[in-house]
Length: 153
Image (cartoon, one colour):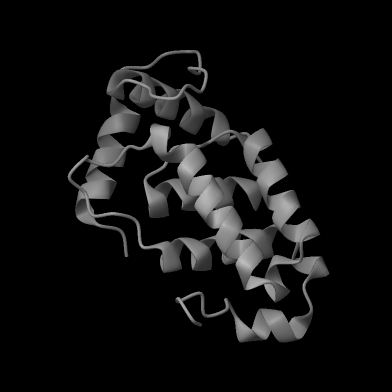
């Protein structure tokens, strides 16, 4: 379940002032630049087909990280599928950590918000990747669900 603060922040950001362009990625972006980018990218997401659009929206809503570029997510999810994420929890964890670190500068979270639960990020990323390349994943892995990604799990 999403924290109320995250949902409210996202809604405020998407309802704010509108710009027609997306800000380029940078090491750090001002809150205004992130707001403008999120709003513009959210509107553009409406044209992205499912399940990719759903995965991108899941990433934003679950992590509060506003990497909304479909091209970025196509590459990310293709990488996970090519590396058989379903049978390799360390691959899932490494990519999850990489994606969170890469997107940290695109956060819509309140700076005082609790840190992301990495186990939840891994589970959510597993589902995103599964939806991206379900035809590659053996039925046994689909039925088993996300692996235990807890330390020592």
